Image 1 (cartoon, rainbow, N blue to C red):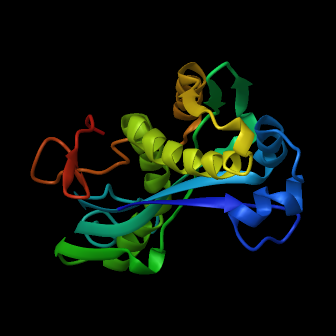
Image 2: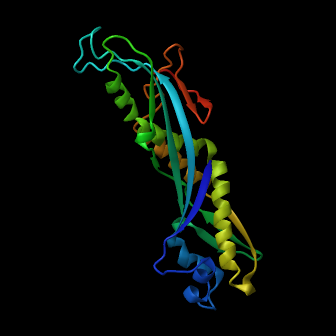
Image 3: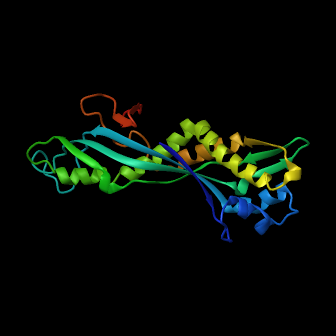
Length: 241
């Protein structure tokens, strides 16, 4: 489920958006453009998505403390874990231009944040075990990778669903701007929001190059040639290990 919140981090305490953007903060003779310029450094729009992922894995043997065929044999595991993917849009990069019949507002880049994964809720089920299998060792190893996998998925979801995320964030920004505009009765104009798609695409490409863990994350399908990795019930198609 997608969730959006608007964080207003301001130096003054306020009793509501109307009071904050009204006379107490801006005065009665400040233009809409000036009001937006003053508040943009203090506003961050946050976007979250809850996901549940699961996969079947036949871990590769960890040679540490191993005696081949006798001890430390890897079991087959079924891993399930929930995560909250996080995104943010700072209005510091917002640009506003007043035109004859509208205000043209250009938003900046949606960025990813470190996802939240409660490792205590990671479920590991042993689906096949033999004599000498080090179940706990391999289960712990898989659980420790949960946050890294979720980090990749955070970027992956931004890349594939950027238009959806933009629409939801844009709605929140537009509501905020309209609230500010309504304090300037003499300046009622249409607010048109646009995005710098080139900057967004560049950000995503740079993050893809910098990310440490990439699919298929060492995940193996065990009885199939392709890894079996599912997010919110939808199979993810990754190339082989």
